[in-house]
Image (tube, rainbow, N blue to C red; front, top):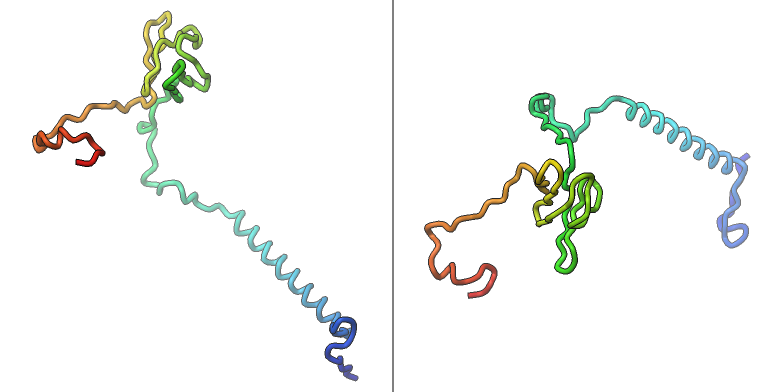
Amino acid sequence: MKKDIAPNSGLHGKQNLSRDGVFSAISVVNQSVCLFAIFMLFAASVSSQTLADPTQPPGGYVASDNDVPTVTVGPALDSVLVPKNGAPLAIISGKTVRVGESYGENRLIRVTEREAVLEGPAGIERLLLTPGIEKIGIEPTKHETKASKAVPSGSKP
Protein backbone atom coordinates (compact mmCIF):
# COMPACT_ATOMS: atom_id res chain seq x y z
CA MET A 1 0.00 0.00 0.00
CA LYS A 2 1.54 3.23 -1.16
CA LYS A 3 0.97 6.39 0.83
CA ASP A 4 0.78 9.65 -0.99
CA ILE A 5 2.23 12.70 0.62
CA ALA A 6 0.31 15.84 -0.02
CA PRO A 7 2.55 18.65 -1.21
CA ASN A 8 2.95 21.59 1.15
CA SER A 9 1.15 19.86 4.02
CA GLY A 10 2.17 20.39 7.62
CA LEU A 11 3.44 23.46 9.40
CA HIS A 12 4.81 26.36 7.39
CA GLY A 13 4.50 24.53 4.09
CA LYS A 14 6.90 21.67 5.00
CA GLN A 15 6.18 18.16 3.79
CA ASN A 16 5.48 15.30 6.17
CA LEU A 17 7.87 12.42 5.63
CA SER A 18 6.55 8.89 5.63
CA ARG A 19 8.26 6.17 7.60
CA ASP A 20 9.91 4.91 4.40
CA GLY A 21 11.23 8.42 3.64
CA VAL A 22 12.87 8.69 7.07
CA PHE A 23 14.58 5.32 6.67
CA SER A 24 15.82 6.23 3.19
CA ALA A 25 17.26 9.51 4.56
CA ILE A 26 19.05 7.58 7.33
CA SER A 27 20.32 5.11 4.74
CA VAL A 28 21.84 7.96 2.66
CA VAL A 29 23.56 9.34 5.77
CA ASN A 30 24.93 5.89 6.65
CA GLN A 31 26.24 5.46 3.11
CA SER A 32 27.92 8.87 3.24
CA VAL A 33 29.58 8.07 6.58
CA CYS A 34 30.81 4.72 5.24
CA LEU A 35 32.24 6.35 2.10
CA PHE A 36 33.96 9.01 4.21
CA ALA A 37 35.48 6.33 6.49
CA ILE A 38 36.77 4.37 3.48
CA PHE A 39 38.28 7.56 2.02
CA MET A 40 40.03 8.38 5.30
CA LEU A 41 41.47 4.84 5.55
CA PHE A 42 42.77 5.13 1.99
CA ALA A 43 44.28 8.58 2.70
CA ALA A 44 45.97 7.26 5.86
CA SER A 45 47.50 4.31 4.00
CA VAL A 46 48.82 6.60 1.24
CA SER A 47 50.32 9.07 3.72
CA SER A 48 52.08 6.27 5.63
CA GLN A 49 54.06 5.32 2.51
CA THR A 50 57.58 6.71 2.26
CA LEU A 51 57.59 9.49 -0.29
CA ALA A 52 60.65 11.30 -1.64
CA ASP A 53 61.15 14.83 -0.36
CA PRO A 54 60.48 17.09 -3.38
CA THR A 55 62.68 19.86 -1.93
CA GLN A 56 65.82 17.69 -1.98
CA PRO A 57 68.05 17.43 -5.08
CA PRO A 58 68.13 14.16 -7.03
CA GLY A 59 70.55 11.48 -5.83
CA GLY A 60 73.37 12.44 -8.23
CA TYR A 61 73.49 16.01 -6.95
CA VAL A 62 73.97 15.35 -3.24
CA ALA A 63 77.13 16.95 -1.83
CA SER A 64 79.95 14.69 -0.73
CA ASP A 65 81.62 14.99 2.66
CA ASN A 66 84.44 16.99 1.03
CA ASP A 67 81.97 19.65 -0.21
CA VAL A 68 80.50 20.36 3.23
CA PRO A 69 81.76 23.70 4.58
CA THR A 70 83.60 23.68 7.85
CA VAL A 71 81.86 25.12 10.87
CA THR A 72 83.72 27.94 12.55
CA VAL A 73 84.16 27.65 16.28
CA GLY A 74 84.03 30.87 18.22
CA PRO A 75 81.99 34.05 18.04
CA ALA A 76 79.88 34.67 14.94
CA LEU A 77 78.48 38.05 13.92
CA ASP A 78 74.71 37.70 13.48
CA SER A 79 73.72 41.34 12.88
CA VAL A 80 74.84 44.94 13.29
CA LEU A 81 72.94 48.13 14.04
CA VAL A 82 74.57 51.47 13.26
CA PRO A 83 72.06 54.19 14.21
CA LYS A 84 72.50 57.85 13.27
CA ASN A 85 72.27 58.79 16.95
CA GLY A 86 73.54 56.54 19.69
CA ALA A 87 76.15 53.84 20.04
CA PRO A 88 76.36 51.15 17.39
CA LEU A 89 75.81 47.59 18.50
CA ALA A 90 76.43 44.10 17.27
CA ILE A 91 74.66 40.83 17.87
CA ILE A 92 77.43 38.30 18.39
CA SER A 93 76.36 34.65 18.67
CA GLY A 94 72.90 35.78 19.82
CA LYS A 95 74.11 38.28 22.44
CA THR A 96 73.61 42.05 21.98
CA VAL A 97 76.87 43.93 22.60
CA ARG A 98 77.34 47.72 22.41
CA VAL A 99 80.64 49.38 21.54
CA GLY A 100 82.81 49.41 24.67
CA GLU A 101 81.04 46.43 26.28
CA SER A 102 82.62 43.05 26.87
CA TYR A 103 81.90 39.82 25.06
CA GLY A 104 83.59 37.07 27.04
CA GLU A 105 87.23 38.10 27.47
CA ASN A 106 87.03 40.48 24.51
CA ARG A 107 85.79 44.06 24.25
CA LEU A 108 83.85 45.38 21.25
CA ILE A 109 85.85 48.35 19.96
CA ARG A 110 84.25 49.10 16.56
CA VAL A 111 81.11 48.29 14.53
CA THR A 112 80.64 49.05 10.84
CA GLU A 113 77.94 48.04 8.39
CA ARG A 114 79.87 44.85 7.56
CA GLU A 115 81.94 43.93 10.60
CA ALA A 116 82.47 44.04 14.35
CA VAL A 117 85.97 44.33 15.80
CA LEU A 118 86.81 42.68 19.12
CA GLU A 119 89.95 43.32 21.14
CA GLY A 120 91.14 40.82 23.72
CA PRO A 121 94.09 38.90 25.13
CA ALA A 122 94.66 37.16 21.78
CA GLY A 123 94.70 40.52 19.95
CA ILE A 124 92.28 42.03 17.44
CA GLU A 125 89.56 39.80 15.95
CA ARG A 126 87.39 40.93 13.04
CA LEU A 127 83.96 39.31 12.80
CA LEU A 128 82.50 39.70 9.31
CA LEU A 129 78.75 39.83 8.75
CA THR A 130 79.18 37.94 5.46
CA PRO A 131 82.33 35.85 5.81
CA GLY A 132 83.77 34.74 2.49
CA ILE A 133 82.23 37.68 0.62
CA GLU A 134 84.50 40.63 0.15
CA LYS A 135 83.17 44.02 -0.98
CA ILE A 136 85.27 45.54 -3.74
CA GLY A 137 85.02 48.90 -5.44
CA ILE A 138 83.98 49.24 -9.06
CA GLU A 139 86.36 51.11 -11.30
CA PRO A 140 85.01 53.30 -14.10
CA THR A 141 85.06 51.81 -17.57
CA LYS A 142 86.71 53.36 -20.63
CA HIS A 143 83.29 54.19 -22.10
CA GLU A 144 82.30 56.67 -19.40
CA THR A 145 82.34 60.29 -20.51
CA LYS A 146 82.88 63.44 -18.53
CA ALA A 147 79.16 64.23 -18.86
CA SER A 148 78.10 60.90 -17.30
CA LYS A 149 80.48 61.49 -14.39
CA ALA A 150 79.11 64.99 -13.83
CA VAL A 151 75.45 63.83 -13.39
CA PRO A 152 74.92 62.04 -10.08
CA SER A 153 73.31 58.62 -10.33
CA GLY A 154 69.51 58.70 -10.03
CA SER A 155 69.11 62.41 -10.79
CA LYS A 156 67.58 63.92 -13.86
CA PRO A 157 69.90 65.63 -16.39
